[in-house]
Image (cartoon, rainbow, N blue to C red):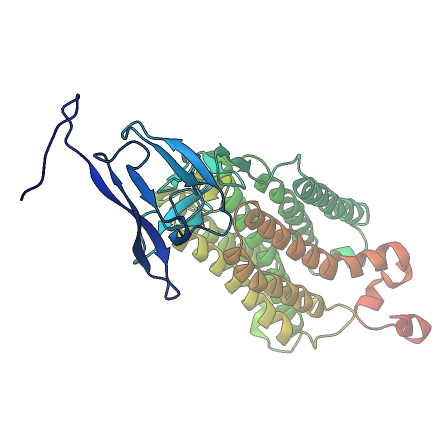
Length: 428
């Protein structure tokens, strides 16, 4: 080619390079502009030529520096060199996202997702924390997850526990009053033994909510649902038996009535036992096939390890609730139909109101139970238990306690049979 080629003392060929500057055009595309050259064959001081006016820097850079390059035996006069990227570095908690159609040095810094972290600068990917840990708020490291279950130490658990204990004391006090006044007509009316059994069941209803508070274990999870289902069915069965007895008692007073043979202590006991046995059978089948058990949920709520009870068989759980609802609906219908029986003796209207409250509470419980997670699911179920128990207790026994303790003159056989006249009857 007619060019003279030589080697230096180190055996290197002569070097000749064009110096290019990277320009960003108005259309956001990049072009390279020749602003000088380097020629190792030129004399010292003449080996590099740069057209400084042709250089386009970032607005923040305007001054030249002197850099020494080990590769080239020359001193380069340059401006204060910017970082050779078009993006700032991504700190911990972020990852680099390469921009489409742009050089690799151009990227966006994207925050790591809530369940990921990065602890390096310019990380290309975020990492997952171990199952028992969770990223910090800045997503730059992992921290231990908090453990959650409804405990007695927290305000919500403490409040529900106190409410349960106080609630259980009320039917216990009413039971004491009924035993004290067991010889009075009002206590004797509509089967005294059923009232005792109902009060005992209500004590257990308030008390069983305490089993839902505390660290869930396999035995606790099994006792929770079984005790709740059986005790509430006993309550509803007692109310159903009370309503049927009232209806039969008044229908049997008619001449030539075939219902006289049904009047007696065997009917209510048989009804309560039969209705309760069905629920016991459902619960025993549940325990045999797929019993409830405790589980640890690490992913149902962010940043928390939830200790909770798994129902085991959802079909058995909803069968238990469904049977309880069926009994409540039957009790409501029977009580509603019997509401027009003589007022002084009739409990049907109070049972109607109690069943109406009971059904309303548990119908609202279902969507609330399905939409909550963790300890609030347990709190919703406890609230439903306490609310429905209080509704049964208030509607059935508070009117009786009012008559027994405050209006004893109304606690007579004549008044209950509707045979009183004058001011006493008007006082009713």
